[in-house]
Length: 159
Image 1 (tube, rainbow, N blue to C red):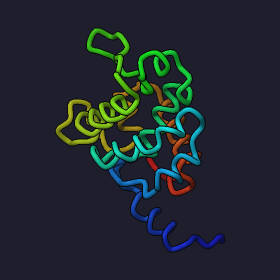
Image 2: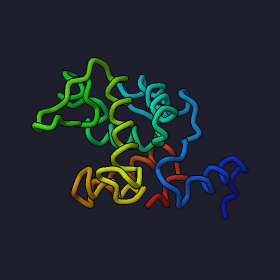
Image 3: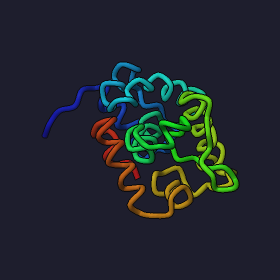
């Protein structure tokens, strides 16, 4: 059995079985080292959003990476929209900046998906969010794989 450091064990204990409202515990440098260009430059924005909304930064980055092809999508490049976020009429939302996009989406995830009285609440798990955010099982699996890639094995047991 491989021994984990005390901090890794604490991080795993805090995150395992908990909601996606747990802090990732990473610095901006650590998070950026796990990301692909151009998203590595946004690590600080994801951590600011985590502090503001309470939504785990690794989870936020994972959704953004999946939805935008690591920031390479047309929506990301032309609309600062890393998440494929849409307007009520179904059109893609245009944000003034990537920072605004990350802040907006993290707050909406917190309010609507991760609060028991939220409009789309279905539990505080990747699968629970996926049932309303993107109605395919493959989405949740892909997000969880990215969470492990970005945040390490502490995210392997996230439901």
